[in-house]
Length: 515
Image (cartoon, rainbow, N blue to C red; front, side, top):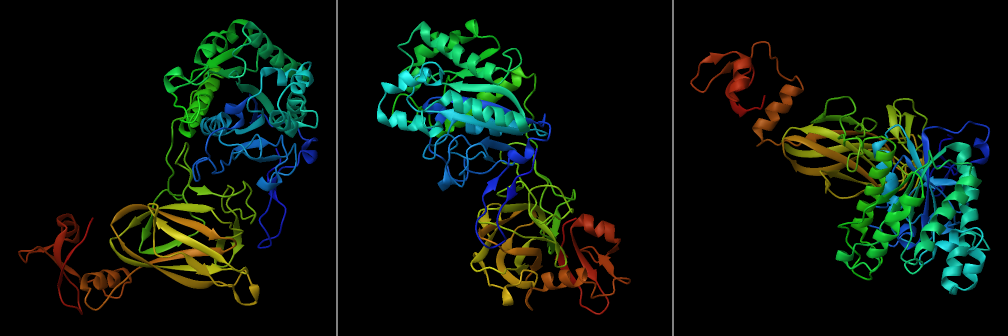
C-alpha cells in the first residue's frame, strides 16, 4: 500500500493528506489493509456530537475512502484515501458507529491498517440501496433526503457509489466485512425489510465478487426502549431475524446504550463509541481474533530519561496499544524528514546536532516518560523556525509547564540555525512523570530539551548536589558518617537515607538522598 504523502512545501500552507490509488494499481492488494463497507441511515451516517480531542484525533492505522467530496474538510476528491476522522459520510454529519468500530479494530490488530467505505443517508429506507428500486424510491421522497443521496452521485444511486469505491479499494486492500445499521425507517415494512436487506447485500457482493461465506455482515439493533428508543421491538423482531435468512450474518446488541436525550432514534456520543466497540468485538469474534489487551506506552530506550539532564526530541516514548496509550500524534503517517533514526509518522530530520523534529503542525504532540529529581526547574529548548507564528506548549501530566512559547522567526528565515529559549517550569515532584510537547503554531523545528535545577546561595543542598553531579569536587577522599558520628561505607549511608558527608575542601552538610 502506498504511503500517505503531503503535497506542499514546508511552512507554505497546511497540506492535504491523500493516497493516490491511480499509482497503486500495479501493486498487488495489501493483505494487511482490511477494508469494511459501512452503510445504512443516520446512526451509521453520523448523528452524534464530535467530541474535540476525543473523536477527532487521527488514528495512524484507520483510513477512509472518500465517498463524497468535502473540500472544507480537506477531502476534495472522491475515491482517495484520507485519515478516518468524523464526519466521514457527509460533510456536515457527526459521530458514527463506524468511527469507533475502525479505531477498535485497528487497536486489536496492531499489524493491520483498517479502512472503511462510508455510504449512509439519514432517514432513508432500505430501498435507497436497492439498485433496482432507488430511483423510484427517491422520486417520492422529500428534497432534503434526495439532496443527501445525491452526495453519492447525481442520481442518488448509493449502491453504485459503494460498488465504485469498493472496486478501487480492492486494488489496494481486501474487503473483510460489512457493518450495517438501518431500520428506524423500515419498521412498517414487515417481512419485506429483511428481504430487502439481503438483496442489497447480495447485489453488492455480486458486483464486487465477494462471497457471503467469507465476508461477514453485522447488523446493529435500534435504540434500546429503556433509553427511550422508538423502534427497539422492530430490532428484536426484524434485525434479530436477519441471520435466519442471511448466511454469515450477526446481530450487534444495543442493550444499555443511552440515547442523545433529543429524540427517540439516535444515540449519545459515548454510546456511539461503545456501539462501535461492540461491532468490533463481534467482527473479531467472527474472525476468530481475540481483542488485543491494552499495552501502555514505554520509554524509547527502555529507561525513563532522568531530570535534571538532556532529553533529545527524537526519543519520544514507544507507542502502546489501545486508547490512551499513544505516545505521539502526527497529522499524517509518513516521516517527512526521512531520518532513519526510528520508524513511525513523526517528521524527523538529520540535521542540527543530530536528529531534529520538523514539519510540525498545530495540534501535533509527542510524549516522554521521565524520572525527575524534586526541585524547581528551568527548561532550555533548542529551536529554529523560518516561519512566523511558530509556537508550542510544554506539559507535565497534562498540566501546562509555564506559558506558551512563541518562537521568533530565525534570521534570514533559516530552518537550520538553532537558538535557545527557556521555560520556567516551576516545582516538579520526584518520580515518574509524562512530559509532553504540544505544537500550538505551525512549523517550529526542535532539537533537544535541557532540564536544569535552579539553585541559589541559600539553597545549599541543591547547590552541593548539582556540584557533585558536575564533578566539581574530588570524591576520592569523601567520607560518610551516620548521625552518631560513626564513619560508614557509602552503600550503607545511601540505605540509611540520612547521613553526613564530608568532602575535602567544603564543610560537612546534612542532606537527605533517595536511593
